[in-house]
Amino acid sequence: MISQLAMFQQMEVDGRCADKTGAQFCQPCADADAGDSVAAVKFCSVCKDWLCVTCIEYHRRFKSTRTHTLLYTKLVADSTQGESTENAHYYCDAHPTELIKYYCPKNDTVHCGDCAASSTRQMDKICSISNQIRNKDNFKELQSDIVQLIKGADALESKVNTKIESVVEKGASHLDQVARHEQTLIEKIKAHSASLKDDINIATSEAQHQLGSVIDLCTDIKSTGDQLGDSLKKSDRNDSEVFIAFVKAKPVLKSKSDELISAGRQAIVKQYVFKKCVELETMLQTTKSFGTYEGELEEIQTSQSTGRPEVQTTNVNQHTEATGYYISMSL
Image 1 (tube, rainbow, N blue to C red):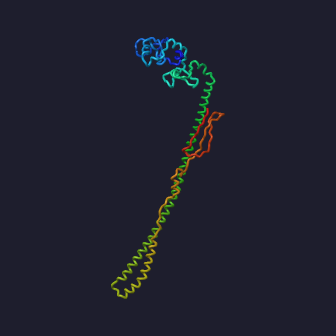
Image 2: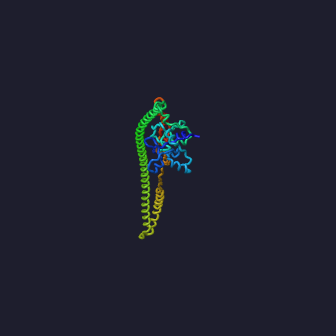
Image 3: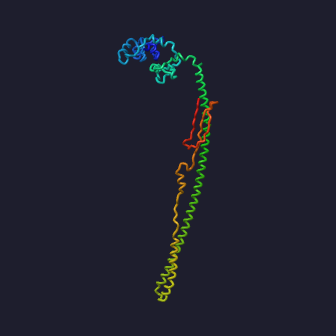
């Protein structure tokens, strides 16, 4: 069974109820504003309260506290005598209100009394093992590593700042290239569009001229037909004159009939339709129709001789979404 002294050495001691001489007073009575401070007789290792005789009786009466280990005040005072308070401003991460006082050699971690009490690992008091820590080799190595870390960060930061300027400069240049490429394509498209419009205007004009000549023929044919009809309808002519007009009208009618057939053929013109360029349409439907943006992945490694980052460029064609930097630093 663990002795009371060993058990207490794994506990935090609250010093709020102590006078200038170190004498302890009952904490429950003080918290309850009972008036005069009552001298404490024992210390509860679970509640971490100093208790007077009356409060000890209540402590043993209640089911939740009757099994708590109570230590005599003299034992508590002896166990804490000579303890260093240099680490008083460091608090436990797991128990923010508790001070760090213990060190776990196995895990290389620091803990408070609550952690030490609940752990099965051996804990060392920091005040007993922290002597001459500044002269230890591993302490000096840690300081050197910190310096190297800062130097490496400075070197990388300088390299990155330079690259930021380069990235911005190249980005502006690339945007200018894209704009000029866009303008070139627009000019080419406008030239092709103008040529196509000229073709349309020429075809339209030719069709209008061809159809206009047909209209002229139709007008002439209708005029000749009216004259022939009038020559056969005149009532003041005798039969001989009508017969002569009839004979002369037949070849004229045949000639104009042939002209009408020819005019009908001339009335047939080409029917044009605009067709988009299938290749251009297909190309514009892809994300790479206008162009692509490819980059080189840079691998930044730490030089074993200088400890500073060095950049090596690997030619890897990647789309812009996959472009980035891989940083590998070993300190």
